[in-house]
Length: 269
Image (cartoon, rainbow, N blue to C red; front, side):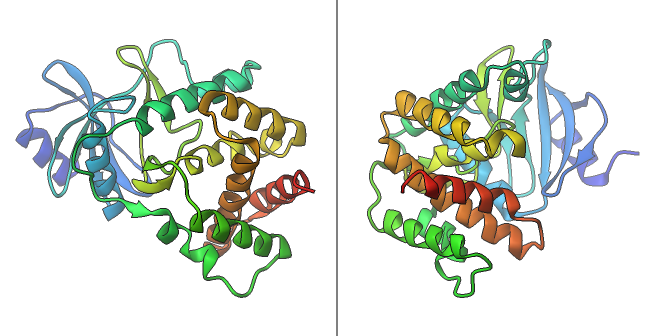
């Protein structure tokens, strides 16, 4: 039986179901067909998803999933998929870790170059980092060092632009129609280098905690973005500190970001 709100929008926007609906932590989703094209109907549970849809509208399909329709309660997106199971995670499994990182960087560069229109609602990086900057009782001294680095970076941001805010291997998908496209942005604004830090925490713990891999991947990011190595390393330290604080707030194991922070800090000594 179709969920009543899905049924409402399937009828309202003249959509045909194309598979079973499913839920995530933030949305109810229904694969569908709109005017002969594959689409995804999304019913958000949280405000963040609606903010994301406004940024996707602003990008207007430039290296991102295109918004086909939207109102205060629902979003209709192009469905990003391919027939050959092409994904960044599969590239890593196939030994093409650096190529996957290059693709993320190249996609981000396209997103960051967008300009010329009135900006959508965005969150500043200083507000995004509030949990780390306002923390006074750190579970690990490493996180205190992360907070110091973050405070310095946020007080001296360079190359500010509209940011995706959550770039990683599962948030850039391959479309047989439009190539590599970003999905699920957080809609932030601030230093361009921040957007590349989350790449180094992914796609899994075993890969992320390899010190040589960390150095090599930062070098790839620097090649693709012209960002200085030390600046990129600092943003990794800041980001994993924030990630660890968030995980601890949610009573999750923050071992990966704390360990990665220690590795990154060791590269500065």
